[in-house]
Image (cartoon, rainbow, N blue to C red; front, side, top):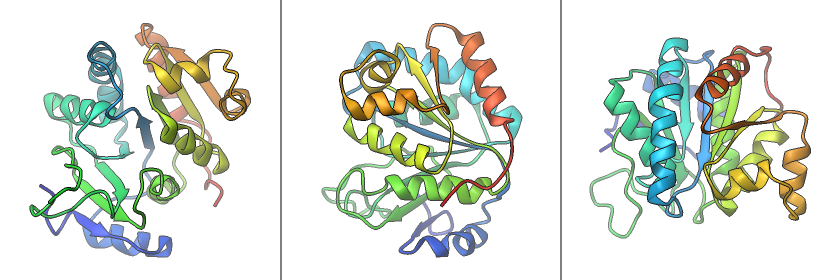
Length: 234
């Protein structure tokens, strides 16, 4: 469970630098914003995701000294991230961001959604519904990265993932979509009839790789996380 020295409730984006300093969270490091499926991830897809995270993503992030910002609840892609992080004995920051109306930072969680237990830091932000946290997730990612590279990784996903990716693109944060992980990721990679998904796919900073080609995923991740530095747009 998150302790008082690693968690915070944030109400204004202008508070973020001060909160980072209080929690001892380093900035100006590469940041991966991980978005994707929660309850809708099937057992077969979860295995694909865990394999990719464990063999490619987590080792690369550890080597780069990067940070991860994710939804931080104990399901789907977020659970897979926490599981592979713990199994690798990784030490980079794993930072959850979720709406205050959906999660609780204390043991008295009641009906709230349980947090993924391997996170190192957690922020609750204004909101009562899933998707309310989307602009905050990318505000946190951009503020931590500062002048270092920021990248969004899409694994599986549902309707909220589309919202997440739209926020990423609005900040000019590149998006790496992993085809073969199901649902939204595969819709972006394919010729979807959905106009919002087509707009995401058509963006010049949206990139697609195949889940089965670990070498390609590793190369593209490394390239994008070493990408041109510069503050992302507000």
